[in-house]
Amino acid sequence: MTHWRKAEFRDDTVWAEVDQESVPVQKDGFVAIVYRPGGKAYKTRLDRLTLLDEEPLTFELTAPTPKSSGATARGGIKSAPFSGLKGEGVVVQLWTDGACTGNPGPAGAGVLVRHKGNESEISEYLGTGTNNIAELTAILLGLQSVENADQPVQVITDSSYSIGLLTKGWKPKANQDLVKSLKQELQRFTDVTFVKVKGHAGIDGNERADSLARSAIDNRP
Image (cartoon, rainbow, N blue to C red; front, top):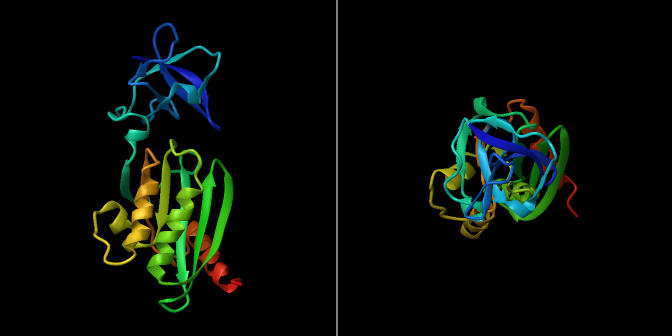
């Protein structure tokens, strides 16, 4: 069994791997952490942790510790069906959507961020653009709003185009600079899951993101 000690990591409580003397175990300068006992393991530097004075726990992982370490352990990008959506208490949920009046035409991006029962919103007018530009930009704005890139993130979008470019290796024929910026932003993160949701189907988070995107257009300068 592996020993774990409770610690503070930014705004979250995590468990850090320790030895039998309750000293953090460092491998290549990084310490394994989990957000819940038995959950998936991530890695961070020791100086980012504040160890708490509590008795360690012993448990095994349900998923292996990533082989790569720290900032180089990025790029855990994958897709999942809507049925695999986890609660926002476990991950940061980014509900994203783009809107366009005409294609091209006035475009807007909307993002609903949910985490641990809290919500925040992004509604940004993008000028003249296409619907695909609006969808991609909404995802970029959502990712940029996440300060703690070491926690798991779910990007929930109705854009098959965006998911194809970012998770399935599709080659962009247009919007190449925007796609490049998105992929660079994704490198900050340890664990990002893209979830495809059906648009305009009455799903609360998607409807909210769509409303934010359209509001940005309606309220443009």
